[in-house]
Amino acid sequence: MNTSINLLPILESSKQLVLSVGQYIRTESKSFDRSRTETKGLHDYVSYVDKTAELKLVEGLQELIPGAGFIAEENTSTTRGERFNWIIDPLDGTTNFIHGLPCFAISVALTEYDIPVLGIIYEINLDECFYACKGNGAWLNGKPISVADTEKFDESFIATGFPYNNYGRLDAYLELMKHLLLNTRGIRRLGSAATDLAYVACGRFDAFYEYGLSPWDVAAGIILIQEAGGTVTDFKNGNNCLFGKEINATNGQIHEALGNAIVKFMGK
Image (cartoon, rainbow, N blue to C red; front, side):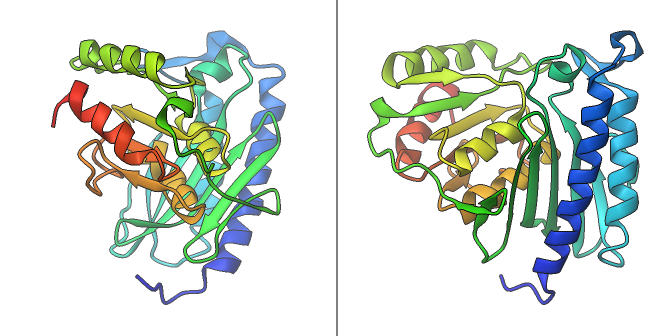
């Protein structure tokens, strides 16, 4: 798909906005009071920092593309665009944030007809800004990045996440994890799906898989990994990874092997 708008200036403007909001989150993290946390659902938390950060992002982004809509985790804006939509997670890794664990990120993506065409993931603690737009590669702090070249599944290094309120597939998920622990170099769970996906894009991880996800968890990571040379599908090797609540994102080399393992233990 060839977009008819110039994405590069939009990427630059949105990146500067994300960096600015990241500075706000960084400042708040130094004195955050855990008692100011709210509960949205089972093991699902939000704070004034999430809400304020999202408001800042929506206010800035709505000026960049007239008529673009929003899919935002905290529902600051619920207006959907016919063609373009910004998909926002203002603070991915909220549980890490409220506990002072240094791994949380901002994730912002732009979709055109529900296909990600621009993505930014800013891991705030390390001051690492990952970004990409369709046809222009993927970057980290001004330097091009690419996925790892690992070819052997038993040498792969994989990230995952644990469901926090959807436990219907947990037993199968744990069996899959056991299989991967025995047949790969290792598994890590950082607590921020956006960061995990960015790390696949830059080659730190060979793959990331998880279920129970929302569009704002994965939208930016999808375009980052694709532009970095990787492969992103759902668990069935289809393309419903943005709204399908599950993702298999890899360097491409081990995609089939991981996908086969997922199907074996999680079913079709």
